[in-house]
Amino acid sequence: MKSISRIFVAALVFSTAAASVAMAQDVPGHPRVNEVNQREDNQQNRINNGVANGTMNAKQAARDEKRDANIAKRESNDEAKHNGHLTKKEQNNLNRAENRNSRDIRRQKH
Image (cartoon, rainbow, N blue to C red; front, side):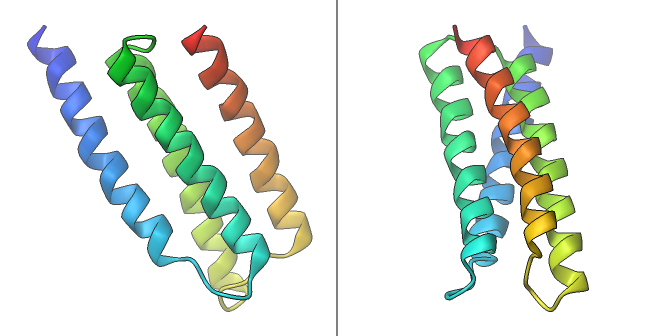
């Protein structure tokens, strides 16, 4: 039980840090970046709601958070290559990854 609590707390701390980083990356006038960041925020909220209402356990939440962190890291790397912008191809790749993660979150919650 203690290990599950530690995982949950670690996931919650990590998600808060990831969400604050994602919010800091919003650049007015860059819809591709803002769209990807909004999707990350929405999925983070879905994970938090799933844990809060008991439809997801801490292990599932931690796995989904890790996937979201990977997507956010890929986004940051792509933005660094293009002075804070995303190409259409990069946006499509990130959206595909977000779609996979979104489906997994839905399956776990139902």
